[in-house]
Length: 64
Image (cartoon, rainbow, N blue to C red; front, side, top):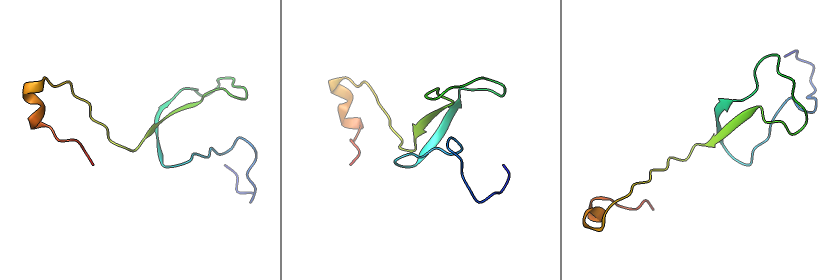
């Protein structure tokens, strides 16, 4: 990107918090229009889900 001191519409993306690029959807040479997804984002928050029977629920603790 050429250093000009200005940012044009569409050159940057703003998010309400920290995000991770999970996947690129658009590829070099693809045609995109306003509203077309070019990236898939994911949270930096780690989440673990498990299905536990009632007899095994004592082995897991809920995060606080």
